[in-house]
Image (cartoon, rainbow over all chains, first blue to last red; front, side):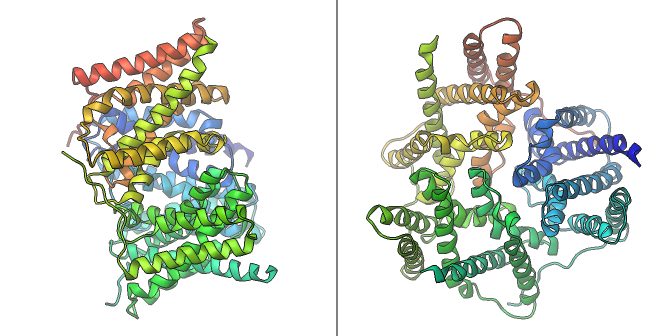
Length: 206
Length: 206
Length: 206
């Protein structure tokens, strides 16, 4: 299973690229210029992992390895330029985004476990890595975070993070656990879009 | 006075629970789902201490001790479920919230002093610990922070933090100083609600 | 060239003061009280350098040296009081703000280079130091960040940061490089105001 490391690295970069593109598409509804677009794209792509690393007191991942920063930058600018010429339907991004969410969550949880975080904290770090970039993107665009409603997103990430933590306790190896967790997240996410699954919303008695 | 340590720990957890509940009630005015509620509750309960610890380069308190995370999580979900069945009047939270503000501020200032922060920085860290969770809650809900107006809140925290720093200089012991600071914050906060005390607001000459 | 160190330190404090004043003027359009004003002023003055230091895992600059915190606090309160008596036209701040942007960017880039950050990361840290305080100010005021549109601001900072990194590669000394970078930022910023230079904005094909 050693051979899947480069694949995971490549998929991680792809996840950053997809998040950067989603940042540009979201920010595009505002009268922002190229600079604003790039900031929102970088926040969307790198924000989740940055918060995880600052909370865990690790070296921030895109400072340790510039490849993430360059990928997010190129993806953001390319989306900015491409959107002028080609219609980019939002559906185009649903599958890559689900894969990106899975990867970011699995990587984030693994990093926290390797950093000796307790299991509940580690699962939360997985969710933070997967979801916080999108929250930061929406805050910078002065919108309420879309992941706070709609189909399952952060909750799918949390279930996957818990899967990743539980399986090794049952004797499953790390690589199989990581793969299973990613499949759980991606499957729940896509099924919830297909069948319009929602979490309960708040309704107060007055 | 050794005997008050467990009391302070318990009150600190209670403060986190009250802040989490306030996060759910605030987020309840938005069309957020259970996941959004939990994120806002955790941000309200843990945000202030997290920023303090990241600024001071300490281990983040809820990573070092999961009890705060679990308490905030349980309190947030319980508020979400309870609000469907029982009417939760906002007044119910005023006293626990004032106690929580006092405790978070006293703990935050003490932590910064123990970390050899200069006195002005330490007083600010107390305010950050007491107030930033509520600011983050409002930013995530796409609202202007309520603590930036209305009755005395952050200013009460600042006065208490300065009390905690000044009294030991006058020869008062640490426990008595901490108790006095907490009483100062709680009293000013409750009196300001009762008598509608306000700080001056900005009025520019045009 | 040793003799310019105190000048740079003084200009850095002046930059913090100008940013704090801009925070008060921006927050003044909201019904915030003195406490809200002070928080927004401190966020505007200290937010950029704080994020840089937390990302690079350095001691936060205003915790290491209280002079920045005191300067920002005094400047914020003074602006609050002064605005009641004297009309403060926004144009008054354009030149000091351009100088502040130049200084913060040059200092931020230098700090990151001294911290062995790769060149692209270092240039971004310069931009973060120069621009993030203003972004945070606007997020706290529940507004979309003004630096995401309008005349050149963050892009001027980025060009200056790249100048500061490129010149030493061509054999230019550090002080001359820093001075040149500052002049580049300040000149582009002021020319872009005078001639209404803009970056392209996003326009999607539908």
